Length: 262
Image 1 (tube, rainbow, N blue to C red):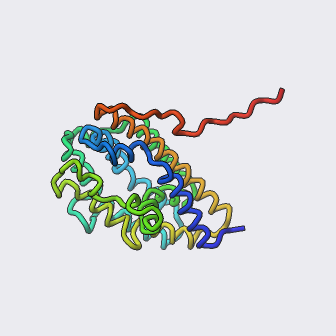
Image 2 (tube, helix red, strand yellow):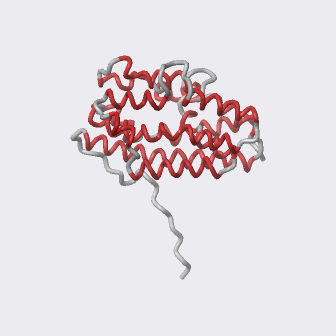
Image 3 (cartoon, helix red, strand yellow):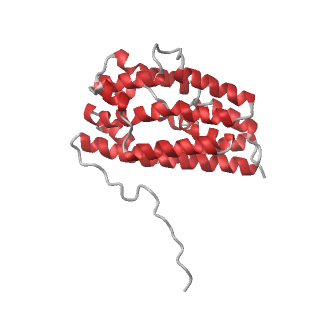
């Protein structure tokens, strides 16, 4: 039996709270407790790759979607990402590169950097999901990151659901160098922003149990891929900072292969 809209929203929130916030990633642990420029460099260059590709994944879902209301939302999201952000002068990716440069990285290097192998795998996986899956599954997966940062999630987990410049305060960067994080907070974390609207659209247009289940499965898988990446980038950040890195043992569930019958 299909979930009611309220039940479906609760299922999405329960899932995202579990996979994103129940256990902190090693990247979260580093940023919260050990943040320094050398470790932030690692995150900055890898996240810039994600930032460069994210609008393309939105566009892939847009191209698959037959519903005008959803397409309008995706176009608005893309416009903020790629054309004009009302919060800042430069675009989202450009402001993210500015952040990396403010940390001390070479701009040309950051612009040319294609990512570590795991970052490339993450990007290719996201490309596959957004391009080949039905629109609702792709939409749920691609938007699940923003859905962990809206007011609905903030009501559950507090400030951890907000993307703000306060995270980077220990680095003592200039105000202009943190413009990207102001834009991200404005776009995702406010009432009715990109962190809230996907719930409303999914509740409205995904109304059968099989489609709801497919959306939830895609969100879980997308977030699992992101968690794997965030744990590894966190380990690299510890190493780059001269700190003993935490172990990745046990961070992903072991496979449970079934032996053949005797």
